[in-house]
Every structure is written in structure tokens, then in C-alpha cells.
Length: 325
Ligand code: ADP
Ligand code: MG
Image (cartoon, rainbow, N blue to C red):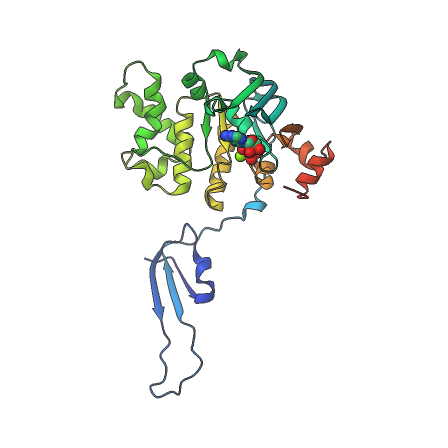
């Protein structure tokens, strides 16, 4: 039973690529030419693509509205940065950044390449200290406690990170999500005990319905967008207070990007999200607060509307209007 049928010529056949449109039959059909007809200009072949359901229209990304109303879930301060500076071999990458990161809010770090966004993000869960030659000044408090007083693995479970390229471990979907949970316990918990937590994390990451039939499937067989949601599930399984995301959509197609943006909107109910993005439209859609960095300095920090519509600094105005970067 086919609900819909479309006839496309070759010039627009590629526009039939929609996720809800698996082409179940693609039949190239040459129109029958008269047996003895003289050679004429070639007739473009007509393709019939039969769809088993009506295609779902996806709104173009720039037209989607903000993911959720401003600061609807604003909660307590989680991270507090006081005059944070980072240098590599004595050269400043981040200079005296002070700001506060709240549960229930998405903070977008924006700015041109090389201005210190990734460095600042990696400093929030002490990944920077793994880089030889890097040093840090200032203070970062997580729920009032200096992050240097915490065991690094504990800190990274509480301030979890998702990277630009999806990086599932070469193991099953289940084991990926269970990874941090297993690290936490003193003795290895049984699969039965972990299962509800794994399912819950997959659900919150918006992936469960797509993988529920076989959680033992290798994670590397998932699509790019699914892999990134799996990495989000792995990061949120231990219930972190803060989720750091470094350009999490830059390796993804627009549809997966939309799914992840919606997800960020949901996730901020329970935690603080800090996202680095090159994409100003994305910052506008997902963020409550925006921090604009330029050459290591925090030039502007404020509510998304203020920064985009009425920035205080001339540099911010130029950047958000696309004058550079
Ligand atoms: P962004 O994420 O905004 O593009 P980065 O934080 O990656 O910026 O980089 C900020 C500055 O620090 C750049 O000048 C970059 O060259 C430098 N930098 C980043 N990582 C390292 C590193 N591991 N060693 C030395 N310099 C680095
Ligand atoms: Mg970066």
C-alpha cells in the first residue's frame, strides 16, 4: 500500500531526499521512442519514486523560533568564574573572565575562531590542565566549591562535556551510556541495576525510541546525529549539574541539528548548559545568555536579546551583524 506517489525528473530528484521518504522503489523509465525515429535530442529520463508515506516537511533552520521562552527554568548558580585566565606557554588565550552559570539556562559562547571559546570551556572541567604548557589563573567554583578541590573524574561527571565530533566508544549503545555510571560505583553494578538509568538517559537524550530494539548494537553503526545524541546520553547519565558542548552540531546535517537544539531546550530544565557555537542563528535560538569573546577577552555578557539586539560594545555590534568573524 503506497500512500503517495511522485514523479520527478532528474533535475529535481535530489530534492526528494527527506528523512521520511525512504524511496522504496526507484524506477528509471525511458519513454518509448518510435521504432524508426530519427535521432533527436535526448529526452531526459523520468524517474518514478514511490513513497510509503507522505513526506514530512521540515522547516528551514533559520526560520525556527527560539527553542523555549527566555529563562523559563532559571535556577541557582552552578558555576562561578572569577577572573579566569588561561595561557599556553605564557601566551594568553583567555584573560580575566568573570561570569556566572545558572541551572535552567543555556549560555552560548560566541566569537571568531581562536578567541578562546574552547579553551574557556575546557577549563571549566579541568581538561585544560591535560595540555602541556597550559596554566590557569583565577577561580572557578562549582556549587561554591573550588573545582581544584574535587577529584578530576568526579568533576568531569558533574561538569560533563560533549565534543564537536561525535565520539562514541567502540562498544555497544548500552555500554557507552553505562560507562560513566560504572566508573562511579566501587564495585561493578549488574546490568539489571544499570538498565533503568541507561534507558532514562537515552530517553532524555531523545534517542531511546530509535534504539530500544537493540541496545547491544555497536554504537559506531548509528548515524552521525544519533551518535551525538548517544554522546549526550553518556554525558547526562551520571546526572551532571553542568553540560558543556563545544560546537556540538557543526558536524551534523540541519535535521539532526534541529533535533539537538530542541533537546538542549529540554535538557536545561535540569542542568546548566554552556554551548560554544559559531552559528549566530543557533545562539539566538537556543541561548538565554550570550558571552561574546574576542581575542581572549570577554567583551560582552548578557541576555540573548540584549546582546543580539542592543549590544553595548561596538565590537559585539559588528560581530552580531556579521561584519567580521
Ligand atoms: P576558539 O575555540 O575560540 O577557536 P581556542 O580556545 O581553540 O579558540 O584557541 C584560543 C587560542 O589559544 C588560539 O590562539 C589558539 O591558537 C591557542 N591554543 C589553543 N589550544 C592550544 C594548545 N593546545 N596549545 C597552544 N595554543 C593553543
Ligand atoms: Mg573552538
